[in-house]
Length: 363
Image (spheres, rainbow, N blue to C red):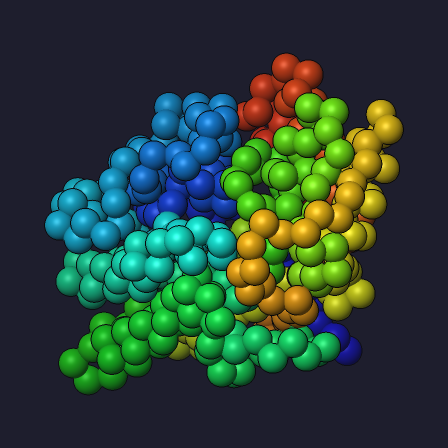
């Protein structure tokens, strides 16, 4: 008989000292709000928000957690605040997170995504922690444009600086795990895993060159949505799906670091993987008011992968994790969040309401 799928345990997080790097970003803000809601003592370390508006500012997150504005490339500054807080669990999300900006600033991208990861892991090596979850990307794989999903043992790669930087971050993570955190003679036993998620969507994202924020900006202003690559296929999922996976993974690492210290994919079911055009069709239909989209030629010839899927069998069988929402449900939640926020409702209220609703969903 197939074992039931697992939920993470909100009670586990009460009074845990948790560091979230990248807490001012889209995913980091959602994760910090969720952790705070479960009673964790949270410190965030990140650059100031990259967009205005931002979920971090709209939810006034700095009032409910310890927020440190700093650059992950500054090892001494990061180490100072880490030593003061003494985290038990670390979620490393701080990154230059977009493909197209990585073409403009490859050195900054590598410094943040590769050396930033090394800075976090070296600080853990020197000062300690029990669990580290390094969040990378589904783009860390060598993309061969094939139709089946990439598994955790596929080769790392990356055509563009962003994607290859995430592959490099995975290699750094594996090296620290094997060299320093394995529990072998002369090493510490620290649960260290990497998490490779698909394309996340959700309320409160205003990043440039990202599909949902680009759609929302056009929809709010009554403009036709410009779409660069309508045929591109991605593993779309609501932001709470992988975050729930990261939380469950951290719990398992706490209890059994040797078994769960490895790489993990968190993505939608294969039946939920859809092209950009499908997303645009559903976004405009859900928004209503005569919303439309059109295909526009990209302003440059920068390479972007066409086809990308994840095989999440490992997380489903070993972590007993799986997505709770269909893509259509996820888009309903996204549109609802932005429409209500646009009508003046509190971003914090909308975010916590959706977290509560997500926790009530059962696999």
